[in-house]
Amino acid sequence: MRAKVFVARRIPDAGLAPIAAACEVDVWPERLAPPPDVLRDRVKDCDGLVSLLTDRVDAALLAAAPRLKVVSNFAVGFDNVDVAACAARGVKVGNTPEVLTDATADIAVTLLLAAARRLGEAAADARAGRWLTWEPLGWLGQDLAGRTLGVVGMGRIGLATARRLHRGWGMKVLYTDQADVPVADRDLGAKRVDLDTLLAESDFVSVHAALTLETRGLFGADRFRRMKRTAVFVNTARGPIVDQVALAEALRSGTIFAAGLDVTDPEPLPAGHELYGLPNCVVAPHVASATVGTRDAMARRCADNLLAGVRGEPLPHEVRPAGSGG
Image (cartoon, rainbow, N blue to C red; front, side, top):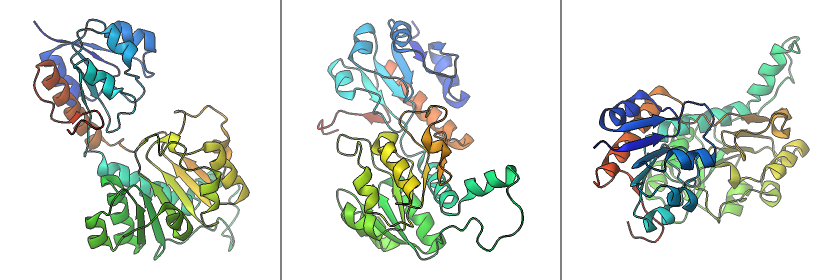
């Protein structure tokens, strides 16, 4: 008997095709996520679930799906999944690590450049007819060469971002993390410092930390006041790490120079949100992994996890509860 699987949004054929070849598949056809009650109903007799970050996998869903064996999250992050609750019910959880590193680092650098050089504001002025001539004082931005980059969270993506900016623009690299990262220290001459030192000394602050109880709301008004008035703030990690009211005020008041965001809280921001209206804020719609190659690689990992789970085999990329030792 073929396993039954619910896929909560259409994913690339690189992953969907092998799942469909092996399983009975129900794919949610809409662009927006299925509502929670609909999701619970669709998985009630399923062996596997392909979820996205917008799909909450919690105790209520698990209780409604007694046959469920595996949740394959189409993402590196998994803060939408109650991993401990899954483990308690014997449901395995998989994610798609490592394949997003370069694409996300590229977007971090893109946002940093766009915000530092006021590219969004300048392009909008050009489209609106406000570009009258070459102006000596027009759209002046920040220099990059030889400046200081502060990386908050020196994991794979933070390291890849630092490599690009150190090797391309000769930036000095500071970082915060739970421990020294020898490859960053050795290859980039990077230095681990406390967060206050990083904020005070960095010209660019790029956030790559996981969303945890400790990092939720990490960047509020006090943290922005500790940054240089010429500083550019970039977040490609998770929206709730930033107090967006405080960020908007910091941008509006000139406490910091500019910001580039690929993640927000909520996603999407509602139409007319104040961050959209600030000329010194570049907001992208969570596109860090949006390349053909990256999304195909994510889909393949997602399929590998899903198929292993419904067969009762070890997941190639399994997420285990904190403190499990796995």
